[in-house]
Amino acid sequence: KKNIGILTSGGDAQGMNPCVRAVVRMAIARNCNPYLIYEGYQGLVDGGDKIKAAKWSDVSGFLTLGGTLIGTARCMAFRELEGRRTGVLNLIKNGIDALVVIGGDGSLTGADKLRAEWPSHVEALEKDGRISKESADKYRTLMIVGMVGSIDNDLASTDMTIGASSALTRICESVDAILSTALSHQRAFVVEVMGRHCGWLALNAAISTGADYLFIPEAPPKNDDWETAMCNTLKASRDAGKRTSLVIVAEGAIDRNLNPIKAEYVKDVLAQRLGYDTRVTILGHVQRGGAPVHFDRFLGTMQGAEAVEAILRATPETPSPVIGMLENKITTQPLKEAIQLTGEVAASIGRKDFARAMELRSNAFGQ
Ligand code: F6P
Image (tube, rainbow, N blue to C red):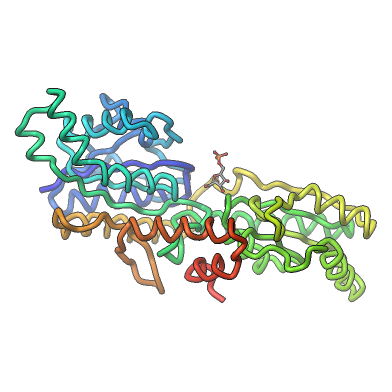
């Protein structure tokens, strides 16, 4: 019988609530004890009433709501060794022997670090007399399961992260709305979408809204004079009768020399070189807000259920897994590898090896 702690961390994402609900209810169904940890890793560090045993009814209504109802934080204290040690103490005090973390790349990196350090924390806490020898013996290892809750769809080893589908739906609705006013005025719009260093949202938004031009970090413009290439493309479609122009810019977009490409600059180029009446819309946090679409409710629920199964299957030797989805199947893979592969994307971009970056993104980016 496992005592399973659940927390959400980093930027919230639609689908986190369905995922928390599924972990709690699957844990109860499998005769385990779920614990809700409030405010992400901060709750782990603070302890006290931030860690509470959960009942079936505590997650009623979670399925359809956006954000994360158990709170999240970008916690500085947890980045320090002492903060993580206090977190370990609070887990042990509550008898928690498995931890489910739902978060993005950074949060899961933190989880992986905690797992690796765990034995040394337990040893130090015993040495300091903060826990007894019996407790130290009982909690020599901690099982950590990661699930990727992030609108960015930026983690390797999964086709889709929880929240990406809802954010993309919101982007499409917003761009559709923008296009109706753009059409009336024959305007050009430059729309900036989120995604941090990942271009998945921008790429999929561009395909789904019929954008004329797109900038993403993994595939910068091949031409150094991309301004001319962009203007030629947009002009050609106007000449063919199109009344609007739409450029989508990922917030992390760069050129081949790794200089940022910003929406305002793109607007100036279009206005000055082509004389288009051009506006910028930065969609911002509206992309992360609101109810999860069907797919994120489904993904969160399936993965949450699998997280509990993964905990029950694990032995002390099992590497911490991350639950994902590949080719429509829920998967369980080593967390460490997923984190390493994800790190390689940024490293490839840093070396200007964009082909490798795209290859690493291939499971989520498709063709
Ligand atoms: O990781 C999710 C995300 O929304 C990114 O797309 C964006 O860059 C970042 O978080 C914004 O962070 P914050 O909510 O802290 O401003």
